Length: 264
Length: 210
Image 1 (cartoon, rainbow over the protein chains, first blue to last red):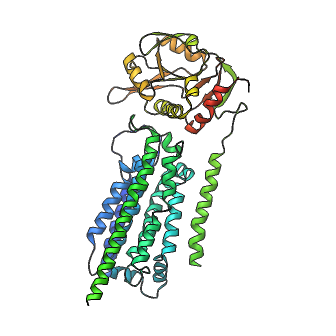
Image 2 (image 1 turned 180 degrees about the vertical axis):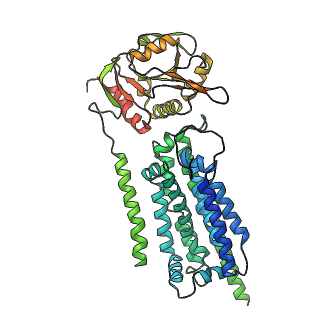
Image 3 (image 1 turned 45 degrees about the horizontal axis):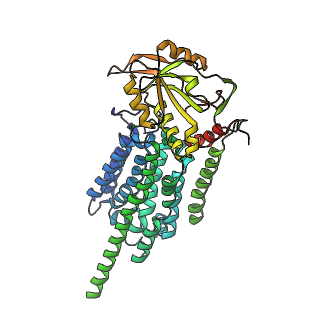
């Protein structure tokens, strides 16, 4: 039995498979969030955000998406990347209310200084981009995805990368460092570096990932080359969309706040 | 301190990844300049008459004379090796110049003639490339042909799946014959498109005076 989805080289089939590691992680996460809220006596429990993160994790890491992405289709692997970094990670950050963050990292504490530091544009971009580049290196992907531990590490790295990416935008008052235009510039900056692996996937003469090039085909009508090119397109075209939407939201909220202040 | 840690740890990861990437790129060429494995003693072409997927006789040696020939024994129900090998060769040939494409024949010989009827074989092989050739023959000819090219004979699995289907154990190797009719290089499963892209022009050029 496999505890985490990893490439096996076996032909694809649609038989359901249990991955206990995924379900254990979800149980632990749910328990941690529930206990944290009770201990800290949150003023409100952002259940909807946590539900989005929890369901997002379940759909991304469990069968069939987890299995397809780990060992068969690069395009599904990319969808996992986007879901973890652009949906699950920000939802997790939002699933702790502002007073929860204040209790987690009281003003002046070492934890608070750490969170404040990572709310800056440069640390956020550096950490996010380095994790994204590293986890998309062909040799890293080819080696990691064939072991359960490696595949687990890649998934967790993407979740962490997403937290780094969104923290400067979603950090609560007291920890946030960027202004409206800083956030907009930051979000634009976040779209630049992932273009590199995306374009490598689209324009490389030959498939860049050995794993997906030689994986048993899920459909005879969907070649490895098409799959990897699609992965690159998904990463760039669909992956940029949430960041542009976030930019628009930041701008709208910023201008609304300024209008409110001007009227006051 | 924090900034230093932030920069050093991921950078170290990136460098390690880059080093790994370079390591992965180091592929050894054979003495003849191929990424495939050169045979110490070239093998002859299987001198048999097969039946092509249109039902016409296919005298192998005569029909492939003067061409680089990639010969592969497999079966159309194969869930992994056969479709990946053929899809990769098709993808590479499609990007190579016409003169290379014209000089290369890709021949797929079924090891499961019971299920691979002519129409099944034709539809499956042409699905990869209209230029690919599917061949079949009697069990005895197939066994003799595989023995002649020094491949382990294909063997039907005794265990059947829930739908009554079965697998066929077969050699995962593509044999490449140069234009002089000698099988000189073999390509195991795992051969990548970039390897084919390098080797196919080299196979076509093999034996030609510079």
